[in-house]
Structure formats: structure tokens, C-alpha cells
Length: 76
Image (tube, rainbow, N blue to C red; front, side):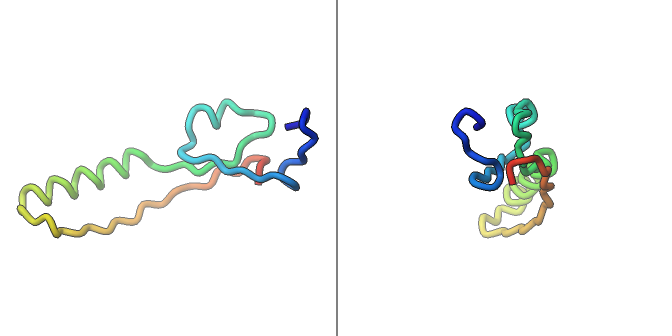
């Protein structure tokens, strides 16, 4: 954003999500992003779906909290 004369993070803050490969490539400024453990999310979801199928209980609610991680860059 240098060419636009915008001061990051003083005037413009941004946070990426998923820690996608694009966010890791962006180096100037280094993007602050949130990393999700996709493998843990997938396992929790598939486990819930299997339980719902096996128990034939569509009202089965499985609240699982999965932590995310903030990877601080220069944009916040």
C-alpha cells in the first residue's frame, strides 16, 4: 500500500483467515492471519456425522471447541 500512501497498520488494518498459502506469500506487509487446524475440524465433523448416522439421531448436538492461532504480522 506504499503507492497509495496508506500507513499500515496505523490507518488500515487487515487480518487474513485460514493461513492460506497466499497469506504466507504476502511479505510486504506481512499479513496478520488466523490459522485453523483444518485436520482437527475435519475429524470432529466426521465423528459427529458418523455418530448421527449410527444413532439415527438427527438432533444429536456435539459442541466441540477447537482452538485457532493468531499469527501476528504487520497489518494489525
